[in-house]
Length: 296
Image (cartoon, rainbow, N blue to C red; front, side, top):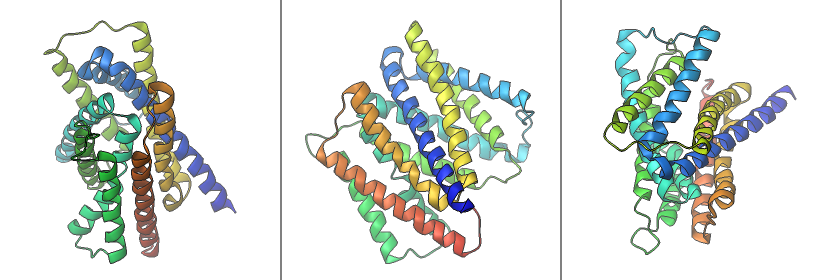
């Protein structure tokens, strides 16, 4: 009964975390076209880094003291995060929010495929079939070669690849590196890089509404990160992880409310296929891990 209760709490926290993540994306989509890609990411980054420093000193988290032997891994992850952030922001600035997030949800399919090759594991026919069907869902959304094809969806696809490589690098990091440190160094690198990029583009005065949106977006990112980590620690990951796909539902709702973006039947079908296949892969991986006696 206690496990069930923890699982329900974990799933609610995960669902809430996905909501605040999508709210962050929606706010950035509102502000980005007004003040530009680099400036919006830079200002949000300044707020995020400031929050990291404040809470780092408040709770005495290790921030600045990272062993040199781990610096290459953290730096590599940070560089990928810079590219990932820029690519995904370009995607959501120029295409429906729900479509960009739906394409991003193909990540578990791709990481399962790459991880199986890297670990020299044989994919079962069922799992391989599910992965292929999931990628067909992506193609249904993209509609390549048709009039409805959006060029900027390529940036969403690149984001998926970058997300996979980022998580693979993260998995190689020893547990001695605190998650707070990794997140802090990543935020610093994203902020510094986009700050330098701002020097080569025209700076746009930021109105009060945009300032409040960026402040809220920065807070929401922190809340989303905390919620997603807390959710998998409270309950079983095989139970809570599939609730990540509630981000698709939130993206459809917020896209319709804020941007009047109503998904077509093909886009809804593609999203449903990606979500179903992704959940299957997550659950099958969860059962496999538990069978080995491991804990996520």
